Image (cartoon, rainbow, N blue to C red; front, side, top):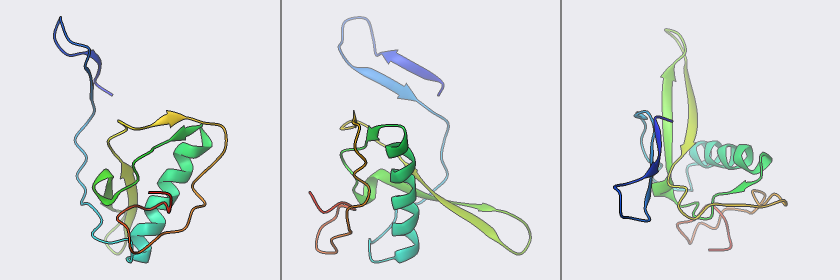
Length: 107
């Protein structure tokens, strides 16, 4: 994180500035690989007590890094924590509902 704090002198808005993430948004929860990567990322933040609160396709980036000349490593990055909150009970076990744009079934 490069910056966290108020924007300007007379506002109540915060800004968080991070490094550039070179990734692409997943296109569908029906893509099992991308959905599993997103589920794993949610699981990781759940382990430290954070509920994202807005697990939709636009709030994930799939990053591919070249591991070596033959294989790549893929992982999901969660963005936009505007609706996030602290909690004490993991919620990431919810199933994907293919009829909705959210990874969790409660949206």
